[in-house]
Image (cartoon, rainbow, N blue to C red):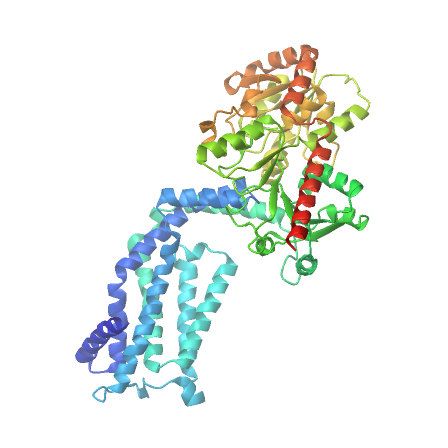
Length: 634
C-alpha cells in the first residue's frame, strides 16, 4: 500500500505543481486517473457488449427450459464461453475504484500534514471532515449523493449492460451507490469527497463518449433482444403467482415450516419433491411404509399447492413441509436424517448439496422414467448419491459401467422396478376394456427441441385426417404453457375436423390407455403405454434428446434406442407422407405385439407389479441397520 500511496502522491503533487490549487489538483488527478484507466474501461465496455449480444439466446434458453435453472445455468455458461464473455470482468472497475479511493484518502492525509500545501478551495478547507463540522457541511454528502444519482441515471439509460437489467436491479444499484456516496460524503475528508464527486461526473462524460465512438447498436440486434424479452416476460407472467413477497402467506408459511422441520430431532426418513407432479414416483413406497411401519415420513416439497398437504392432514405419520427453492439450499446443507430420498438429480453439482452437518446420510435417487438415465441425464448427475433405485438391468449396468469408465466410487444399485408402471398396469387391468368405434390414435410428443409439435405435427394430422381414425393430440404441458399462440392456431386450424381433438386442458381424463396406437418421438410415455396395454408405438425420428454427450462411451445401448423397433416402428421425418401406411400396419398387427411387449416389460423392469414393496423394504432394512449401529456406538 505504501508504494501505491507514493505513486498516487507523486501524481497529485504533479497536478498541484502545475495548478497551484489543491482543489484544481484533485480535479486534474481524477481526470488523469480516468485517462490511465481508459483501456480497462474500453475492455469492460466491449465485454458488456458481448453479454448483451448473446442476451436474446439466453432469454430463449430461459423460455425453453423454464423452471429448470440448473440446465439454464449450464447452457448459459456455455454461451458465455463461446462469446468470450467474462462475468467477473465487470467487477474490475469497481475494485480499482475502491483501491484508488483508499489511496486518495492516504494522499489527502499527506496533503493535510504538509505545511507547504494550501488545502483551501473556493473558501473551504479540503482537510475537514463533514461529521466533525456539523450541519454547516451537510451540503457535502448531499452533493456526493446527487453525483452518484446522476451517474446511475446515465448508466441505467445508456450503459449497454446496465440498461438491460431489471427495474429492481437498477433501483438496488442506485440505492447502494447513492447510500455509499452519502456515507463517504459525511465521514471522509472533503478532498476525498471532491475526488469521488468528480470521478462520478467524469464517468458520465466517459460513458457518452464511449457510446458515441463504439456505437453498441452496430453489434447488438436490439429487435431480436426485444422480441426475446417479450417472450420470456410472457412465460414468466404465466407462471408467476401473485403475492410472493417476503410478507406473503407462502413466505410466512415457508419460514414456519423451516423452523418446524428443524425442531424435530432424530429424523430418520426424508423425501424431497420439486413439485406436486413428482409425488407419483414416491407414492408406492410411501403408502407401503405408512401401512406397514411406524416410521414418520418427513416430506419436503417446493410446491405450496402440493397435494401432499391434504394427505398429511389425515395421516399423523406423514409430515409435510413447504420449502421454496432458495430456502431449500440452506435446509439441505443443514439436513439431519438417516435417509434422504429424491428424484432430483445433480446432487452436489449445482446449488443443492449434501449435508454439511451429518456426513453419513444415505441419499437415494429414484428415477422418474423407465428409459436410459445415461442418455437423458447430464454426465455425473448421480455421482454423489449413495444408492440408486434401478428400474431394470439396463439402469444398473449403466451405473456400473460409468463407475468403471471414470473410476468412481461404487454406489449401491437396488433392483427395485417402477411403481408408477405397476400402478398404471393395476388400474388398467381393473378397468373395463372398451372397443373403440373407430381406432383411437393418441399423439403425445416429448418436451424438447424439434419435437413432433415443432417439426411435423401438421403433416401428421394432414396425413391421417379423414382416414377413419379418432385422433387426439395431447402436447406436453410445458409446450402448452410456453407456446400458447401455437396451440391456439392448431385448435383454430382443426376446429372443424370432427376426428381431430387438440387437448390442452389437462384436467380432463388422460386418454392414453384407451388409445389403440400411440404416436410419439422420444417421450418416456411410450414405456407406460406399451408396458401397460401391450400395444405398439409409432416413433417419429425427430432429433434424439441427448443430455450426456458421452453416453456412448460405455458398452450399454440406451433402452430408448434398443427397444425402439421392438415395441413398434420408427418413421423418418422425410417419410411422414407414409404415416398412414405405418398406422394401418401397426393396428393390423397389434395382437402380434402383445406377447412380445409383455415379455420385454418383464425383462427390463424389475419386480413387475410389486416394486413398491421391494423399494420400501430396502428403506426399512437400511433404517434398521443405521439405528442398530447408532445403539452399538453408544
